[in-house]
Length: 187
Image 1 (cartoon, one colour):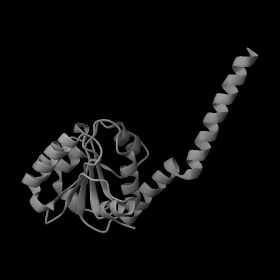
Image 2 (cartoon, rainbow, N blue to C red):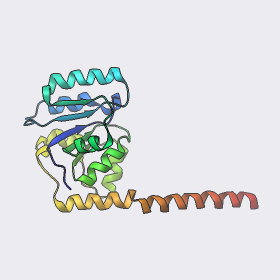
Image 3 (cartoon, rainbow, N blue to C red):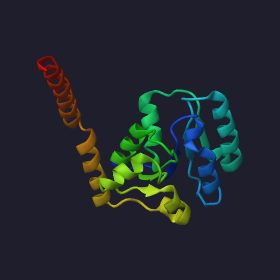
Image 4 (cartoon, helix red, strand yellow):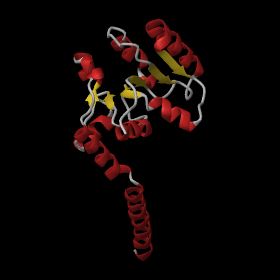
């Protein structure tokens, strides 16, 4: 299932680590064709959320949706499902759950090049982009991943995060702990 809209999801919380204003400055120079800018702000600092909402509204008017109250999960996933572009401008690993879900849905993902998650996913051959690539080629907002690219991303995510993989990793960790403890008792 591909995203069912062309909106843009920015960040995952009301914290400065999202670097919202940098992204807003990049997007405000683009023709966004009535796309909604969806900005989750319910987690984090309410004063920061208020500032981001004010700036977002001044830049994008009615097309800015600052989500500062919690929504039912189904409603939230339906809303972010309208986003074909996801911009997570964190310099550290953050918002992994949102990124994973949006990769599974087939969205374009834009991450900071210095975010360790970007390097990790690229090493796994995920089709994702940097914020710099978006800055240099804003038309990426109008492109969509091919079915093959979407499937490639899904396979990578399933190999990393499927229930079986997580259970196997947990079992290996438990065994490692148990065996290291038994080695200690023998010594």
